[in-house]
Image 1 (cartoon, one colour):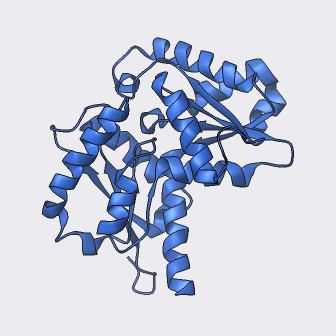
Image 2 (tube, helix red, strand yellow; image 1 turned 90 degrees about the vertical axis):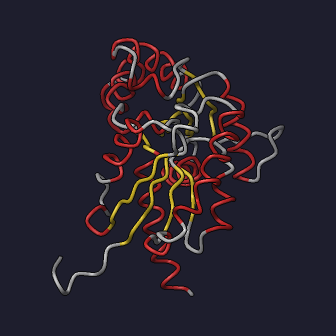
Image 3 (tube, one colour; image 1 turned 90 degrees about the horizontal axis):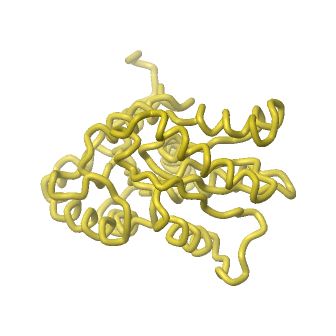
Length: 254
């Protein structure tokens, strides 16, 4: 590094499941943002005691328990990080838990994606989430309403909802690509036909790199021009960029 270059920000990408393959995919995504030259990505995968794929509330709680039990081993290293990204697309209990354990900014890819999607909309446009199993439809919808401070009964005119593909997070690395494409395309089509969708959020860390499937489906539904204007948000990428901003904001305004 040039002696006059600013020091790199160090962000821990924490995968609370035990899939090393998923971690590798997310690290690759994290290193492909406009701020990557100024960010050093550290990664951590939960041990084999954690679920290999987080697919329901029980998995969220189990992964939280495992990671919290392993944090003392990371205690000496936490001063080497400027921020932590919880790389699970859920209302994950590790986000508040780690906020109490760590002095710097902490966010999840779910929370970061909401803020980014909302910032990309023009008046009258909507955003929505394409995700894995049926469980996530209510879990993520309720999480969006809570995060935005909107009563679920009152709904949100900007949020179009959640469409599930029937896949699991682990499936993106194990099932045949054609099956992934078919199921993800069907879920995307359902979301795009539900409203004036201008932004699709990929609701799983394991979906990194699957933007082309969503874009291709959008061409079938919306046509070439409108599909080209569709925003497709990767939670890991936007999480890294938001933490980069948060670190700078803390230095600027404190």
